Length: 395
Image 1 (cartoon, rainbow, N blue to C red):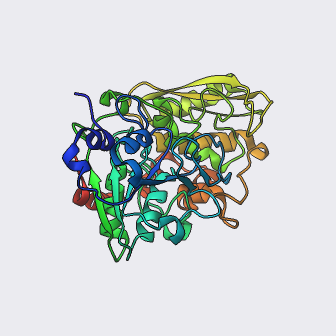
Image 2 (image 1 turned 90 degrees about the horizontal axis):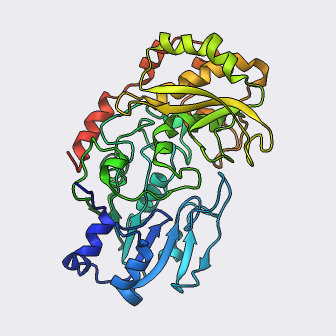
Image 3 (image 1 turned 180 degrees about the horizontal axis):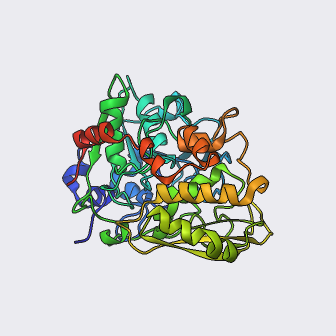
């Protein structure tokens, strides 16, 4: 059965629309569309008219056209809607009091990807924290977790490694919708709640992957043009903490990793294939490739590497596979392997890989060439699963 997003539910329910009597703002991006491919801003203009007074964009901008981390977007007046568009990835990642003036209902319609490292959930939670003590209702128009709401994987972030790619104690693959993230934030991470409403999806089930929803996919950030990229993202995003390419500047970004000094076929046949078998990791194939990034890391230089092909989404464990591949490439490349240096997401002191991992222990696991079984000790998920069960909106 086709899923209807929170936006779809709002669009088709006149009585629900009539609940919101005051001025309206919308935090959205390129993927904020309804089932007819119509952008949320156009729907809001029709529904709320002159009461639709402001828009906001997250990282990568309202138009989702800005490529890289720490590349900010500007505030401007939208030429069609003739209302301000404020960037929450600019000189500030928290809306200012001035930005929030005259807003009664602040809607959030962002497509998340189900991974702790993806920043949109923090744009949402920083907004919620800013609205404490203000007479502003925050309404989350819920959307699917594209990599399903059942499989949870990875370590819980440690507080000393908090950053804009990890603000809360959740695992890497967290299994929540963005609406559930808002509810968990209010229940467990703050002392004072705000006026929050989540407009639920219709017909979404926790075991659904995105293609099961029959919804249209639009890229929520510039390098996730395909739903397949969201499945590999919890593996390949780890390589943002290195000087290896994670495929940016290619048509398969965040599905491939590589480096100019990798000879992929020899490494695969002579070493990697046997290591994969011993690891007992399943649900994927690594295909040796060469590729040419047109920009970002190693732009204009041919790289050898691997594409991750998923053969069984339910059995596929991207976080473990990413850590496994990191360990093998670290020891294969030797001195040619380098950890990326700060700054990363406005942290100027800690290693980017440690911020991405939410701990420095996984970097040491890689460097010390420890066994795949040792990853078990990082997945302390029972307490998190209990908290998740308390805020779940869907079966």
